[in-house]
Each structure stands twice: as C-alpha cells, then as structure tokens.
Length: 254
Ligand SMILES: NC(=O)c1ccc[n+]([C@@H]2O[C@H](COP(=O)([O-])OP(=O)(O)OC[C@H]3O[C@@H](n4cnc5c(N)ncnc54)[C@H](O)[C@@H]3O)[C@@H](O)[C@H]2O)c1
Image 1 (cartoon, rainbow, N blue to C red):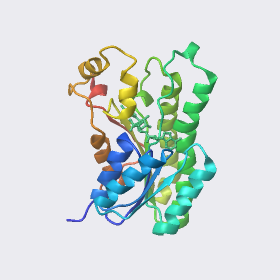
Image 2: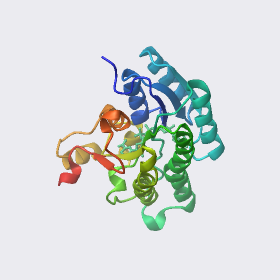
Image 3: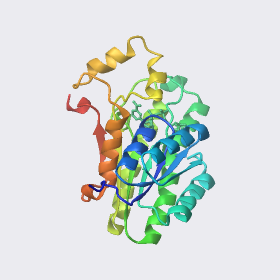
Image 4: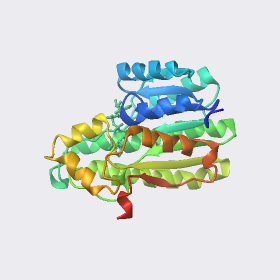
C-alpha cells in the first residue's frame, strides 16, 4: 500500500535528533523524499543513513536555521536535487538556559529567539517562496510547544519563542490559504528526547512530576509527534490549516 507521503519532497530541520529524527524515519516509511537539515553534521548524517536504510531517496545538509543564507541554500539544494518542495517540518529548536525572567541574560534571550522563532520564519520564507513558484500548494508544519499555548516557569525566551511560532503559523495560514499552502504547528507535551533529558537534570523527580501531570500518565515518544506531523503534511489533512495542535497526552483537557 502506498504511504501517505508517497513521492512528496519534504525538508525537515533539527532532523539529527529527537523529534526531527523520528519524524524523518516516519516520512521515509510513508514514501517521502527527504532533505535532512541540522546544525550538527554528524547527527544529520546518521539520520540520513537511517532513512536511506528505510528506502528513502534522501540528502543531508549542515545548516543553521538562524542563518538566512544557509536556509535559502538548503531550499535551493532540495529543489536542485529533487525538483520541487512539497512539505516542510520546521522543527529545529533549543531549550536555552534555565532562568527566571529577571535573571534571563540578553544573550540567552537573543539566541533562543534567533533559532526558535526567527529560524522558523526564515525557513517559512524560503519554503513558501518556492511553493508559490511551483503554484501547486504545499504543507508546512512548525514545532511550537505546550509552552506556545500556556506559560511555563524558568524559560521566558523559550515560552515567548514558542508562542511566536503559534502566531506565525496562524498568520501564514491566513496569507497563503488561497494558494493551497497549509500551515500548521504541533505543540508537543513532554517528549522523551535528548532535549527533555537535558531539561530534567535541573529538577529533582522531574520525570515523576511530569508523568503525574499528564492524563495518560507517561511521557510522549518522539514517534508520536512524527505520526501527527506526517498526517498534517499529507493530503489526508487537506482541510486543516492554521492550527497549533497540542500533542500532549491530554494535558490541556485538565
Ligand atoms: N522534547 C520535548 O519535550 C519538546 C516539547 C515541546 C517542544 N519541543 C520542541 O521540539 C523540537 C525538537 O526538540 P527535541 O526534543 O527533538 O530536541 P533535540 O535537542 O533532541 O533535537 C533538536 C535538534 O535541533 C538541532 N538544532 C539546534 N539548533 C539548530 C539550528 N540553529 N539549526 C539547525 N538545527 C538546529 C540540534 O542539533 C538537534 O539535532 C524543538 O523545537 C523543541 O523546542 C520539544
């Protein structure tokens, strides 16, 4: 049976780890051709090997999403290699340093905003320009967070950046709906990735506390985000746009 992304050309950022890598593998399983982007070259190469083993036509490129020239080059390379761009998962992000608002350094603020928010905008800018040129629409999914819908303590830049991603997603959905470009976001709850492991080391009993706060009483797995992103990028979600979608184990039902 054909996959839900059969023959689609997709670009994934932050694909060298966690949610991005798991999503790349799911896209490969579903028949997509893949451009794997990460600032960590070795990690990107490992994901490339994994998706090729799954039978995907794929390429990887080291690029920093906060660098406009590198992002534009990544989209251009995707098109020169695969002929087009149908889908994008703008997922690269950092957690930044833990600090309350009055203790957050300007350097930390600027870095988190540059990667998590400006980076998503730069990616969308290059991707949308290419999709408009093709004239056949497209699907973009950005990674926000539950911290893009509600506040959280100790990461003001992260929370602001993820709220920004949710807003940018809605704005772009309105601007490009008439061109059949759908723009959505996923808002993950706590997902078992290297980023979460880094965050949990700052708080005693962090995992237990997170698990207790989740109606499903467990952490999420990166594949559970990847399955949602694959669906949102596929034609099966053809009437879904402008949605920052919680994938949070029921957290927001409380
Ligand atoms: N893990 C969670 O609980 C969770 C929850 C909500 C949202 N998120 C978001 O999901 C996304 C992925 O997180 P993850 O948990 O898989 O983290 P991760 O740290 O495991 O992976 C992030 C990847 O992004 C890459 N990256 C970082 N800066 C980059 C840059 N400037 N350019 C290109 N690539 C860059 C890293 O090298 C890494 O491979 C992030 O945007 C994160 O904020 C994660």
